[in-house]
Length: 191
Image (cartoon, one colour):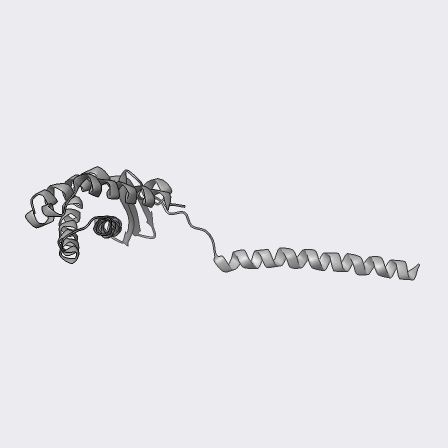
C-alpha cells in the first residue's frame, strides 16, 4: 500500500513538474521577444502594391511642426527607396531581356532619369494616413504617403521619349510589361 501511495505521489510530482516546465518555457520565449507593437499608418494597406508605391514614416519632437516634418521626410525616404528599388529591377530585367546597344550607358542614363522622376514625384504624393499622438510634452506623428504606379510609369516614358539615345533602345510595350510584372511581384511579396 505504501508503495502504491509513493508511486502516486511520484507520478503527481512528475506530472506537476512537466506541466510547470512546459508553461514556463513558453512564457520565457514570449518574454525574450518582447511585446508586439502595431504602429499606426503601417498596416498592409499602407505598403506598396501593384497599383501604388507607398512609404511610411514617423517623427518625434516636442514641437508638432517638427514632428510632422520628420514623419514626412521618413515616409518620403521610404517611398523613394521603394520606387528606386523597383525601377532598378525593371532596368536590369529590361536590359537582360532586350538586346540593348550599350547596356551600361542605358542603365546609367535610366538611373539618372529615375532619380529625377522620383524627386518630381515626391512633390506630388498623397498623404493616405496621418496620426498624431502627444505624451509627456512630446508629439509623435505617423504618416503614409502614396503615388500611383501609372503616374511614375508615365513620367518615366515621357523622359525616355525626350532622350534620343534612350529612345533608340526603348521598346515601350516591353518596358511597360516588365514594369507591371515587377509591381505585381512586389505586391505578392507582402506577407
